Amino acid sequence: MAAAPPAPAPNTSELPEAAAMRLVRMIGGDRREFIPEWFEHARESKRILPPHFLPLVLEHVPPAVRATASSVLGPTAAWLAQLNSTWTVTPIVAEPSEQRWQEGTLEERRAELAAMRARDPARGREWVVTTWESDPPEAREAFVRALLIGLSDQDEAFLESALDDKRKAVRQAAIECLVRLPQATYAQRMRSRLEPLVAFENKSGLLGKFIKRRLIIELPTSPDKAAQRDGIDVKVPAQRKIGERAYWLVQMVELSQPVDWTARFQCDPATLIDAVMATEYAGELLDAFSESAKRHPDPAWLHALCDAWLSLKQESYLNTQAVAQLVAAAPEDQRGALIEALLGRKDHNFAFTLLASIDVPWTSSLTAKALELLSNRARDERQQWSHNRNALSQWALKCDVPTAAARLPRILETTSTESAWRNALEEFNDLVEFRAAMKREMV
Image (cartoon, rainbow, N blue to C red):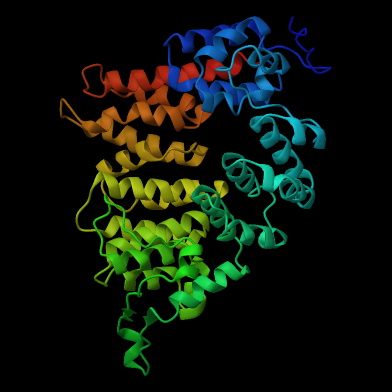
């Protein structure tokens, strides 16, 4: 007979029935896209879901959402998960326990390690070292990735040893950590490989100030064993349309530190990227520098790269997606300003597409700017069909609710019932009202 479910923590209250019933309706198909946001509000309320709703949630809410919802599901969910192997729940760790680290399941050990790394990174690393030889490959990979929490130069020696692991996924996890350590010997090795391959022509004299500097590129020879150990693959993937030697260079750039380039060539990111775009490898290198900048999201680099993607003569959905990914990588407190700067770059169609593609919450300022754009477009648009109207369902997922709730009714008042935009605006307003009610019910 299974043990009785554990009691909730002291002073933990349950979510109101109205909030739980809304979740049930969403699981049934009513605005399912807002389920992650429902759990986000529930976490902020510091309440748990009433236990009688747990089987439905564990059965139907996607694992990726449940993985971030342990504090909302409460201790009873973990007890239920022991009775059904398909109901995975990330354990709640109030106090890291070495015993649970030694004896728990993979998910339990991962949770214990994350909690310890947040509290004492050195001790967490020691845990990983003590069980490393006996852990299976999937556990080693998970534990190395957990070292991103509290990552510092103190982790370098262990991560370097992980580069010799037999499993490629473990080695890649170690690289993802090492590449984020600017002073590590890994970064120094990558700088040494790139230095003879890329030069920035310097224009001297008075006229040199007005002549565009040229980037000189020499493609690398086949990666040696040391380069392969550092993650440079020799074989080009079948889906990549790129030359072999260019592919080796691209990988090195992806694993480099953006600040190294501007420091070495004594220029700003925009100047360097401008020179990159004049080379015969512009597309490949733009993509590579973008991957590097996502790991090291310096605002000046993100602005320069977004501008480069938008300057491409052949516009495409993929270009907009590349910009959206760079925006998502930006520090949270700087995303809104970056997006607002980009919106002034092109026409309204681009602005609507970009705003629909960016998968991050909007600030109040950005929401106000987007709604001003929307108001002008709805007033002036006379076409009976427009892909811009289809973007509003995506806007509704990310806009700042208080700002949108205050402004949308005024836009509706000035939009004729005969307007081609009317139905889309009403649906937008309904979605905003749904989000507002969802948060109110948490109280």
